[in-house]
Amino acid sequence: YWLLVPAAVAGAVLCRRRRIAIYPLVGIVGIVLLTTIATLGEARYRAAAEVPIVLLAAVALVALAGRWTGAGDRPAP
Image (cartoon, rainbow, N blue to C red; front, side, top):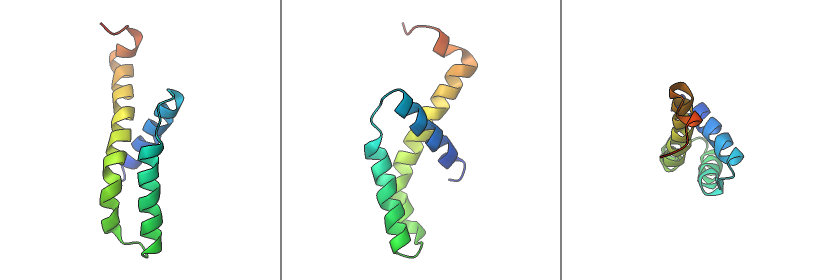
């Protein structure tokens, strides 16, 4: 989980730079954060935020893999 969070932040930044709407994903994470704070840190509410975190982390990892392989330099077929 703690390795995915920085990758999710990087993915959110990449999506924002590409002008992709991220408010549905960030909204879910925000609601879970507020609910967790209101219930004195119950970690079980984190399950609802795991899907957006994984999706945003995947965006960052795909971009990173594209840089390593040079796929970002070529146009799509």
